[in-house]
Image (cartoon, rainbow, N blue to C red; front, side):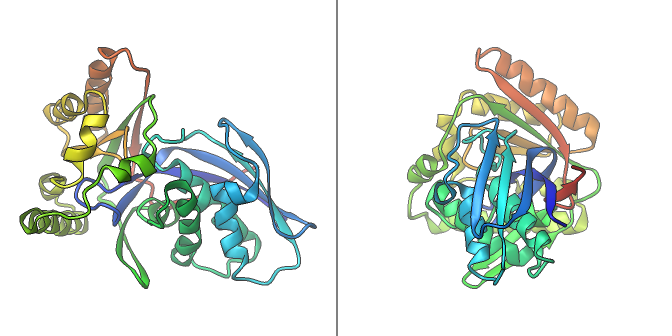
Length: 308
């Protein structure tokens, strides 16, 4: 292949209890990207549509991630990347991770797949450093691997992929305001109480167990966050009201997607997920703030090849 076109999915990170270690992948919203071989060595970002982002390779998350991969291989050619952004920056559904994941996946395909999807996570994380100042994998791991992912450890990097229960759907409302990941990380407290940590550990374990056993009630009981959500929630207009509406309409659980301002809910079945979406929309229509709404099955594949 000389070039490849990709769907680079949006993601939900943290999933309430799993700050920086849990994430899942969406199927109905994402960027598109074209990666092609070039005679000129290195990486060049040749086009960006849908967002005002830098074309300079070292200032673009896709470029930084791509360069990290190329530093690990020998190649006689370079790559050009076109990015078509459908995920807004600062949305809380993995805009930067979609770009980073797509870039490394596409280049890896054109190189003959020297790395597995899990191995690509490390390179994509380098783009996240540029975006947020932190090499976290809770977005890029599900974007590359699909399903749910648990980052068991960062040193060394250890990613566990978990299949989604068949009837699990995500609803995400994205208020059209921007909350920068770096700023939302700055509001967090460096220390938490032992009591809070124990509760959080229990919820992480419960959520993982619920996913493996398709126990929807256990999944719902485990979508609790007493550490990060209380600090970030006040920055999201009507957060508590939207979360309450989601639960009243049958969601298993609801919380902040990534660093916000998007709010997610997980539901059992498409009908409930759509009902949750309708309730979220009604709540946000009272604010006068523009928004986008997404209802999606969990994407089992991650970044995928689409027809040119």
